[in-house]
Length: 464
Image 1 (tube, rainbow, N blue to C red):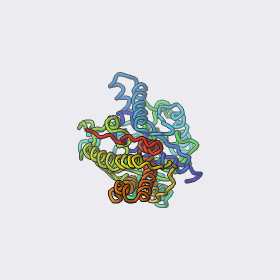
Image 2 (image 1 turned 90 degrees about the horizontal axis):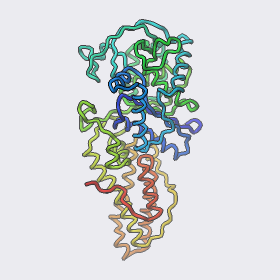
Image 3 (image 1 turned 30 degrees about the horizontal axis):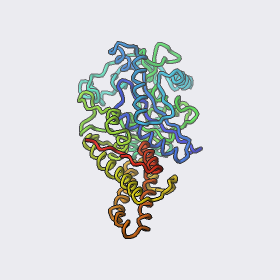
Image 4 (image 1 turned 180 degrees about the vertical axis):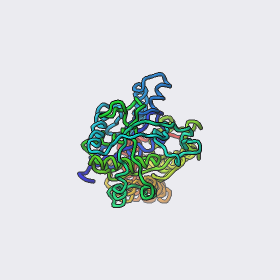
């Protein structure tokens, strides 16, 4: 990392709905990495926020009989409250209605307009308000139905402004091929590269003439800036002074915006590209796609109220390799809570501390220094599931040590080995408290407190 800096961003979340498990997934992943790199002494900057302009927001506000600004204020506050509950420690929460962001967007577009990268032309085509995206007929179902929102796209005809996206196709390909723009996992990189190699890019419509809820085009106040252009620029406006990011986390549904449009905009304005884009998959719920219509949208805050925050953070990144699609099942969540957390880790701490008390073992807490390079490498490579699997190997080996060494028998036959065994277990628990800290910070702190004081409390209370 250049200058020991680690700048990480999540997408900014569109405020037409309240936060759900998918939003939490990306944001907790960023939090895990931010916490990890802070322990390595990096200067971490973690950016997240909310995307608040566009036709869909105006419609939602009208439906609720309030102004768009009051509507976005309310929903954005819900995101900030949810991230607080989930123990997400971002450095900056950006909103696209922030005055500084709006000024930055206008100055950015004015710059590339003045350099000849933007022109005016007539647009006639299809637009999905749900996606806030212009659509080609080949990407739609019969009857011009958006396959995602199952609604007919609007036919739009207007004089608007276009960015010369097609001009940058070769440069983007070369940046990906040469490693200047790293896209992971490899399967996602291959999808983007294949698309760029086969599909000629069209210039990008960057304004709307009939959507008043947005940032005005600086040289033509009769138009507003296309919501996706506005949203992408949050990374620059929110990251001034620390650009470029070492890592941008995104979900696969917005991969083309970030891997094609975004680098082209940066190239046009003379900015460095982000070092890496990491594209992760979706969660289904009990095997079904998450949908308000199906009523299976999961509120992470509600789960945290029942089980605690750390078990949720643990499950999301132990259950599914980061980058792949996965399934969220409450039954599976409960199983991991009981087996992995309450039994494997919780019982290990409780049994060890009880034995230390019973056999009057003197052990002084010291900050852990043992290195676990394979676990660290897995976190740095975003192989969170692998990292947690390896941490649990350490936990399971410690539990096996208790079963094999039988300290209760050593107390009668070999007190020297008893001290060595229990001291070794306490040292391992100390290591574990450090290893789990990025994933389960509250549990890590509880473990340290109990190891220092020898006051035993259940880490993960049993659920009925």
